[in-house]
Length: 484
Image (cartoon, rainbow, N blue to C red; front, top):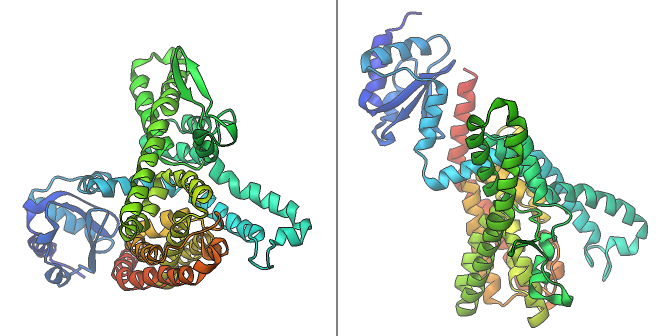
């Protein structure tokens, strides 16, 4: 069937704000891909009435119009001819779309690009760790006992699963180093080496740093003495921000060296100098700065809690999950231990558990809303992991991917945290940071904590259900367009 491609192109140009509104334009097999200067100038209703236009949507800052195979190149040619638009590649248009994103969107995209390749390792670790938490939780199945206490024969199984579960988190900087180096354009193997450097056995385990810094049990923080410069021997197991920043620095150093070092000695000089410079900066500057930033955040939150508990709870409930993204949440372990020893309980850990539950609830809502098997599988396994206290799979695999579920989880976490803080709910110990968390709550506070749990379950689920439908409808439209 013959079509008037000139008229179709003219109407498309008219309804997207004219040729002057086009920054760059390209096309794939079925769609026009256009980077617009002002998306508000698009007349969507009129555009859908144009012949051959089967739909349109915006993805990652790129406006896409579904035309269909065979016709799209003819329409594109007429648009270029009529509008004087310069031909561009799909990569050019994508880059232009990324440039239109704000700083926060670009930062989230970096996290997404880095974590998507290593997500399977995080999902597996989360599920295994959740199963292990249940085996070791006292009072969960048997009064005053864990399954390990009641059935000592399970200790071997527990130890094996624990080792498998911890591997991805203990060596998380190595995984992130590999993926971040790939994202930033550097050597992936050097990214792995840099990540392993930050978790070297000679460095103090990051989870014990709080005790050593506080001088508990006579412990102290060891350090390297480099000509009078003291560099703390502290590792960054399970942390993200130090290796992300260090990997970025490493890639900049490597990419700067390569064109300046002769090929004959490049294999010898570039890796050594890159690791020496970036490794030194990671241990001497980047890591400590990230840690002190975490300490500053912790001190500020404790101050706010003392000043106005409801305000502190709202801030903590809303900010804890973003802190998990940076790895700075580990600093709260030291605060929890100090509060337990000095006040007989911690008000922070119960809110952490509710934040984890909220992330799981939002992911669970996405399971019900998802339209394909892969998305459903990712959402369900991630939700289970979050309900057992491991939220990275839910955040990186589901909630941040769609954004709205993440915001819904933050809102639910904040409301639940305010509720339990007004009742002065405390935990006597650090336990399973998810649905089984009530085991560690001081008994007289358990009823109110369970009420907070209901809020953390219901509010994120409901908000995600209400807000994410339109987003998923757009995603379904894009998927359908890919099959045109």
